[in-house]
Image (cartoon, rainbow, N blue to C red; front, side, top):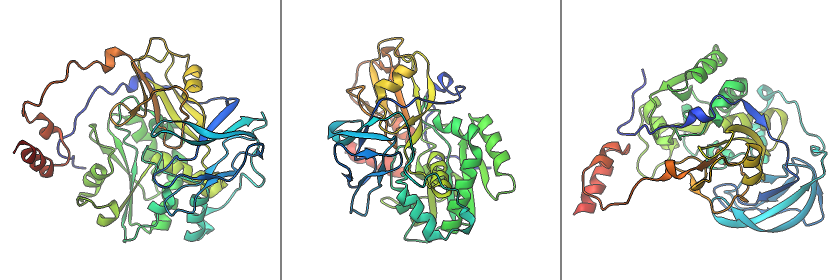
Length: 388
């Protein structure tokens, strides 16, 4: 039996809007805007110029910086612009604009068909780095760096909690592509040399738990049914609940012998290692009470929010807020023209009925925030210090 962490909350999750919608592959828009910053670390510089013809999977952005992830063309076509465009996380950044040629042809040599069991760890890590894989739960940390911890690790934790309200992309991925997640977990277990691999899923997703248990049978991978509460999917919370270890303040998971990866990241790693495919698409939830037909979409990187929303029937009501990600950690957007990126787990359009929370008031020191805070005594000390 897995323990729970201190505090936490369980807001209305809104998942009923999209959780039963199978993943749909959205048609490729005529134009894709590919930001050169889609990861934690240094932005990439374009390796192409206006007028160049590119193929899907071709490298179009890189950086000499240690902390970066390469960026690839999500479609075949012509580079028509390289300019500053709106960005969902940093107002704007340089982007490569590609006009589709309608062929959607992969760069020569892709896809591959490799046997990952015969590959060396260096070859596997090279494939992950070359594919530009980042944390797809929203953190966007370059995967190849995270998978080379500076300290020994003995446990790999897969984040299938998806505790953010409304988001159901990871849930549908677990239901529909469980084998790909299992393969990716085994690949990571090989290169990390861990003794234990665990997939953590909140217990409000019984179907996903059942499917993943069946897929993991005989593979030395555990499936942990975790209590449903936010922020169950936070890295430190997962490590505490599954491994009963506390990451020290200012520390990293490797400081307690753990590596945590999102299930979407692991599925992308399978594609990169086995088929050599760069990260050019992802599954994104388009939901909220303002969306006419909430869906889970397999969508190309660079697709405008406007196009994804239109594919879901547009707005049935005027949204009060448009969010990149979930309502807890997501960022409010000023434009529907921002593009879907590697870390775009969801697009939410919420009406005032959802966003209205009444007038803001001064803190009355009731302490309810301390009771809910999952960080424990340190948070209480911080509150007392603030009061003093």
